[in-house]
Image (cartoon, rainbow, N blue to C red; front, side, top):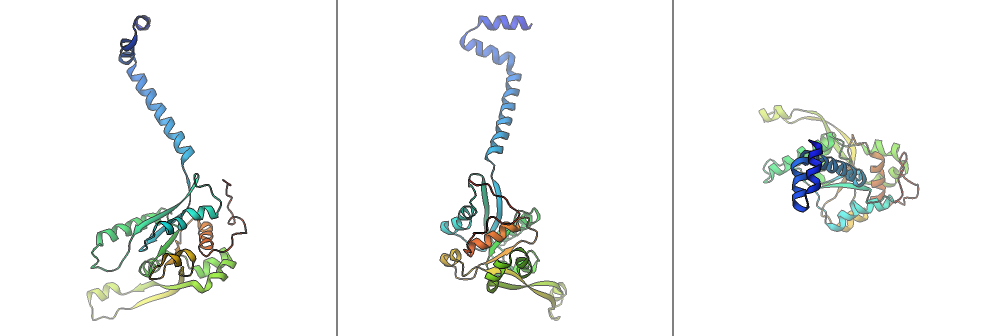
Length: 254
């Protein structure tokens, strides 16, 4: 049968030959095309996929083009990282509020779910936020106490920005449910104060952006990239980066 097919193939020309090949070799050709596509796709992703060095988020904070470039692209330059191989993920458009009458309730609910998913998946390291979002992150225990963390991570950085550390409360326990059921009962809560944030108001990028209220930075408590988060704080405060790369890291020069 195969000899007969080969003989017929030799006698055909042009379009008839192509049609004959398609009719008798359709399945092998389709399988070959799929294998080539999958192989190309794998190779393309392997050689073009960028390493994400830091995941950051803007919560209740809007950034224009200049600020976005400063918060994202310029940081890679600061670390001498090749932007074709590395990236900083900057999540934007996230909004949190405790106002039950908020007209954008569904949007804030979606933001909350997204933030929780990113934290749970260790895909969020640094948050830039306003006071309302800072309160929410602090009270839920999502942030490092920077007065404890920074002296161990980088004592010189801690001493340089100590005056900009901002305290907030974490609620250990309260009677919120009982208070809602019986408003005659006074609301009571057991709280602790910790330095969960850094006021960025005096940093060049934030100051030049012209925000009407302070912008705070916090480091997510389960971040696996705290060394890069420390470098990010250094960058924002424009501390000279002449000590090499952060301890424990090795960066490839572009």
